[in-house]
Each structure stands twice: as C-alpha cells, then as structure tokens.
Image (tube, rainbow, N blue to C red):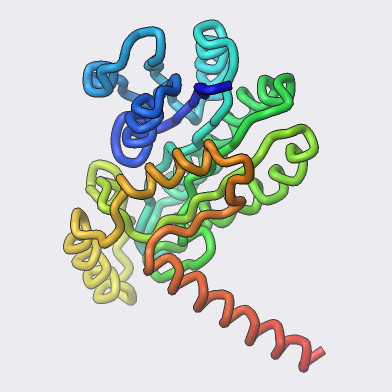
Length: 272
C-alpha cells in the first residue's frame, strides 16, 4: 500500500494542521477533524478525493463514532490515527475551579479515548494501523503551574502504554510523542487557560508564572514543522519508535526525571 489514510483530531491549527498538510504533501489521504472547520479545506487546498474535513468535538462519543463512519464511507480504511486535540489548563491547583479540572481531563484524556474507541475496531479488522498520541514532556515531568495539565498527560500516557500492549498482537502499533515547548499557539490565551481563583499564598508565584507564559508564547525554541516531518517519517517506517521525545528541553527534563527516579528508587530500597 503506497498511500495511507490519516485520521487527525485538532487539525484546525498547530501541529494537527501541519500533520494534515504534510501527509497530503506525501501523497496520503487525510480526515482532518476539528471543533471548528472554517477555512481548513481551503487552507489545505487538496483535491476532494484525498481530503475529508469533518467537525468533531472529541468529548462527544457519538460525534467520534459519526466521524469514523464518515471516514470509512469515504476512504474505506484508517491507517494512522493521530490523537492531537487538547488544551492546556495552567495555574496552581487551588486556583483552578473543579469544572475546569474535569474539562481538562474530558478533552485531553477522555476525548482521546472516545476517538480511539471509535477507530480501533476498524484497525482490528484490518490487522494493521498506527495510533499516534500527542502527549508532552509534561506527561513525564510535572512542574508548578502545570499540575492539572500534567495530570491529564500522565493519565493519557498510562492509558496508552497499557493499550499499546493490548493492540500490538493485532498488528496495531503505538507512538507516544512528547514534545518540549513548541512554537505553536498552545500557550495563546485562546487555547491555554489560567486558574482564576485568587489565593493570597500563591499570588507572587502565580504572577511570575503568568509573566513567563506571556513571554514564552510564540518564542518557544522547538519547531513544530520539524516535528511534523518526523511523525510523517515514523508513520512510514516498518518499525516506528514507541516513544518520540522532541526538543533539547524535553530530553533534558526527561533525563533529569529518570535520574531523580533512580535516586528515589534506590533510597526506597535502602529503607525497606
């Protein structure tokens, strides 16, 4: 099979859009989904027989099933699922309302589960497929101001690590992508949320964190174009990576976490 069919969530902008664009450039077919589909088809400017643009709120299981059915009706198969849709709920835990914490999990974790539950039966019938999960280095490392976001990504990765073992015997592969800070609109106020409960004990730290986010937005060191190209290449590899860390910062933070864990595990063994 020379061309693949991609099913991409959050394809309206950022990395999801770049993946849709680059997959089409590679000669593949793309199901590009997003909550808002305005302008996506025109921007991607692909022929109708290779691009299907669908509205999809990943938190709605019925919508995920309907999008999958439309994809199969149009293209007959799905070879690569990219669970990319997500948002960043930032801020100190006690400053974030409960409904916003739950919303973070509904999108980042349960949204990905909804789409996987819709698509995996097709991949099982095919006995082939690749599930690409766009996580973050914050799925390995959590920092002040990112506890809720990291919690959703830790959960996402825990689910996918186990699921990957369940589906591997059926010919379905898994790739977890863990970028560092990338130059997308992910930190833009239109995407990222900040806690709005005022807690005096955290006021100075929260103010400093918000300044950091404002300054970092648009100035992140990692290039999403390069990451998109890497994912496209992995999807064509006969033996794709199981995990792909992207960016010097991601590797530094992940290595530091591994070293910290080694020390803590050793100390725990000495105590028991």
